[in-house]
Amino acid sequence: MTTIADAIRDGEIPGRVWFYSNYHCNLACTYCFTESSPKAAKRALPPDQMVRLAKQAAELGYTDFGITGGEPFLMPYIVDVAKELGKLGPTILITNGTVFGPKRFAKALELAGTDVALQISLDAPEPDLNDEMRGPENFAKVADVVPRLVDAGVKVRIATTVEPDRLDQDQHDRLCALHRSWGVSDDDHVVRPVVSRGRASEEGIGTSLEYHQFPGELTISVDGAFWGAFGPGFTNGVGDTDLLLTRTIEPIATPAEALHRVAGGRPDGADAAIGIR
Amino acid sequence: MPIVNLIDASSAPLLLRHLFEGDDPGPIVGTLAQVPELCEPALPFLGAALGPSGVSLRQKEIAILRTSANLGCRFCTDGHTVVAADSGLTLAEVRALRECPTAQEVFEDPDEQAVVVWIDAISTERGWVDPAVTDAALAAVGEAKLVELTMTIGATMMLARFASAFQLPQPDELYERLGGLGIDPMPEPPARPVASDTGTLVTITRRTS
Image (cartoon, each protein chain N blue to C red):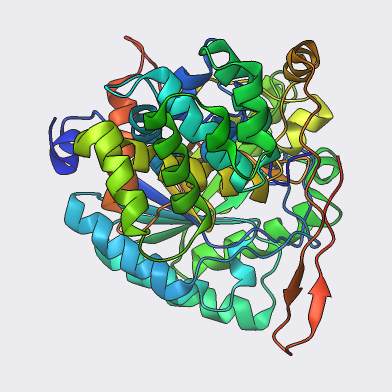
């Protein structure tokens, strides 16, 4: 068996590691696969552990990092953690973009000039359709903060999560015109399907995927290490285990080797094209 | 009702899916699968300690059933009552191993009597075993088999406490088999008072099925 670094270099496994910084969120989106909400338990990974694990991962050969939740910006230290990860490799920090009061906005500006990109969710070009899934005032808050972040030099990506056929071509075009007007290029706009896990599966929406249909990005949460960022979800209040690799998360070599074993057992021609970024 | 969610085919972690592809592997595996990196190495060990080996199946079942009963594990005792009967133990031997404080008296073979006394010493006492009991057991089965039997007793003690801790259930079919043997299910052990950190005795409420 090759080393983890060889496997990443050869494309056998992805080079990104995701961290679930926390599970609680100011929103309760209809399709959330972690069942995040204001009432969800924090289930926070300690900041020093995220940095330590990222350093271990970099030593193994991992090249990229991501932080997601929950809403990571509810953790006061998250920008500092992201900056540390950004020193190790390109890092994506996912946020819903609705929690940027003056204090958090000022803190987020520290990401300007770093290798950290904020990925902000926006699901439709108009408030009604977007806010139906993501909550009241979501569109307005995102539309307010994205241009200000871009103007301040913070890298911003836009992520659109949709059910098949929910956005027609005209709506898609208007959404793209909108993010371009904010200074976010098409290269930094990702459209991905709602995945039928967690709250989406309870609502009977989304696309069902087998594990080999999305990237096996090593994903760390307080509950363990998982195959892919869809792994550490919750369904009806119970943590999902079908994509669990190990409960051990440190040293990170333990789950990395488990993931490498799983990758070696994927069916021929497995197509891993759908991710959360 | 078990006190943790039992993993099944739909929730099996990736590296353990093969365990759930055929027949239901049972609640011990369903519980251990919560921790894949523990489940993976544990199962081969348990298979070696409890499964077919140089020690006869009959001797192993004597060890497993007696140890399970000594520890008051309903799951293991009822389950291995059926296995023991299928392994050639007489109904009188099975009943004695489940219920009788001096079960060795039911066995005709002096070597098996020595083994039962050894099992009782290992699974109910603390510290070193009485030299007379040790000598008798060594004479009965020899060094290698005594090592193996003792590991079988130890593995059973581990699983018995594990199964009791998580209140693992047996299927209805097992109780139908027990009924066919004319044996009642083992009564659920009562809640046991434990000392709180203030030194007061408290009673832990058991979740009932």
